[in-house]
Amino acid sequence: MTYRQPAWTRAWADLPPVAGAAVMATGIISIALELSGHHGLSVAALALAGALWLVLAADFGRLLVRDLARFEAEADTPPALTAVAATTVLGARLSVFGWGRVAAVLLVLAVLLWPVLLTAVLRHWQRRMPGAAFLVCVATQGIAVLAATLAAAGHRPWLDRVALAFFLLGLLLYVEALVRFDRRQLLSGAGDQWVAGGALAISALAGAKLTASQVWGGEALRTTTLVLLGFALAWYAVLLGAELARPRPHYDVRRWATVFPLGMTSAACLTVADATGVGWLRPLGEVLLWVAVAGWGLAVAGAAVSRAS
View (cartoon, rainbow, N blue to C red):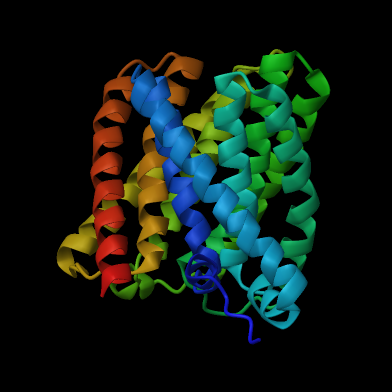
């Protein structure tokens, strides 16, 4: 008898690596909702992010076991790093939720995946790269955020040291990605060009976490965090202007890489406001949160229509 693969597993097989951005987007919106006091909505988003992560983790394992050639080909591309970034965003939210042990397991998993995928991506680095190139920074800063979050929850100073090391490395990787970023993507990108700003937003979030720690708090780190957030907001304005100048209304799976920076900028504003005492960042973050939620809804609708057609 010929084995017929179930429909739901065939649907998994069609998912590209960038689909991990859906977990990143949903997870960071859950964090921003929690920071702004919308606990019920935050938990609902967390549950959805967790379910999506499990689906993608199963697909990741299936490829590793049954289709190693495709796994190796996809591991060479920047979107593969969404596996690390999504794991750290989910872990950060679970830590706040009180599931510290699960979050710690996710941190270990992310740290184990990070060098393998990062090395594969950097080996195939090109001169002109799309916005997904900034995922080398996002994945690295995601580890910094999760390590700092667990350090604060469990009072483990050594995790703050780990977080600082990844924070600084993430900034170096951002510069490397910026040098190679194809600026034409601002007007022609299918969605992942927004990661140019999202990478700075998650860097600011990591900086805010470290600023609030008992190990690394200080004026220099506070100033660095505010500068990073300022550049992230500047990117937000530039990218939004490019979208208005050259509208791209059709759905593309890379649009999840637009929603993630929208949510991350909101979460960064809310976190930096508390860490630095710059009060006006909180209402700004709350406004940007609903922009991100609207973007998430449009991405869900686009994905549903795309699957149905």
